[in-house]
Image (tube, rainbow, N blue to C red; front, side, top):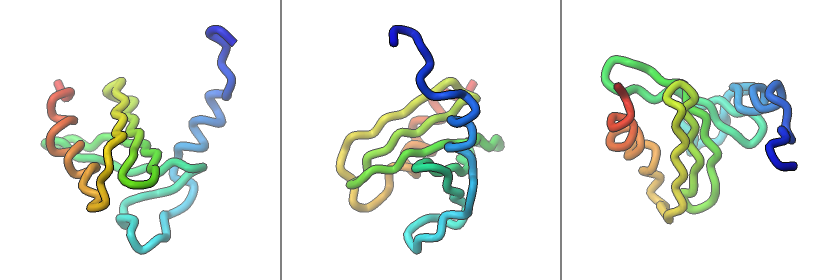
Length: 97
């Protein structure tokens, strides 16, 4: 288990891809859905970044941006669902070169 890959790279790529359009009323139109992961783009300045999002209850998120080698984990409570906007506006610009 130490250093052993437990989930294949192919499965992870497929699970986090946009297999289907997200269909719930509360989900933005730009979201696609994989196996428990959402896929969308976040724009910083004039550049678009492919983002993978695990979305938990009460505003908990895991946000992965492979291009920036960045994982953002939010464990706070946010019933207003402003987390993704805050990440796009305040966190991502700090990591864009």
